[in-house]
Length: 101
Picture 1 (spheres, helix red, strand yellow):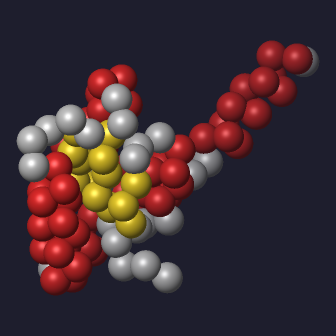
Picture 2 (tube, rainbow, N blue to C red):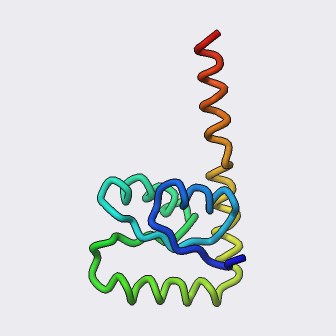
């Protein structure tokens, strides 16, 4: 298992949050960046834009510092599991079942 996940936002990022994995996320477009910003500001992961200057060096440094900081990994993990419970599909299916009744 990995200590830190590098992802590009979207469903994979949400699944990693539900699993409590600390992450460095590189958004792949403006809409993706906006949708990931809320979780990043809550402390669930470090977020970078795909087009920012020095992206490679910034991500490398972020991963390096996160790997060395177990307390920060734990804080990210707790934050992520508090924000994303992994039960979104279940909630949607329940609502759909209610609509069909």
